[in-house]
Length: 53
Image (cartoon, rainbow, N blue to C red; front, side, top):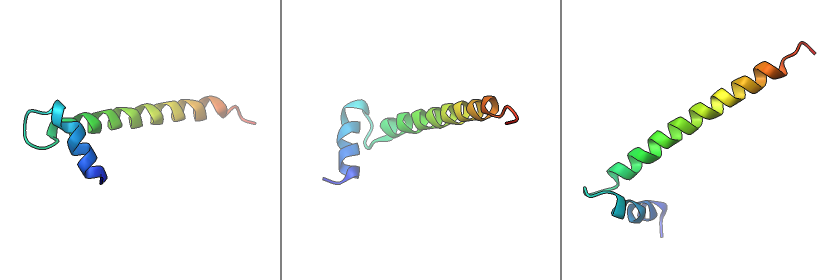
């Protein structure tokens, strides 16, 4: 089974429209939030780790 078919099967119960529209929107929003949090955490770690050593 290909990844696209797997995503379509997962999206079936979530979305009432044809295709994985809502499911993919949820995945995109969650990935943007995750990347934003990762960037924020890394920026804080580099800022606090730079003590002039």
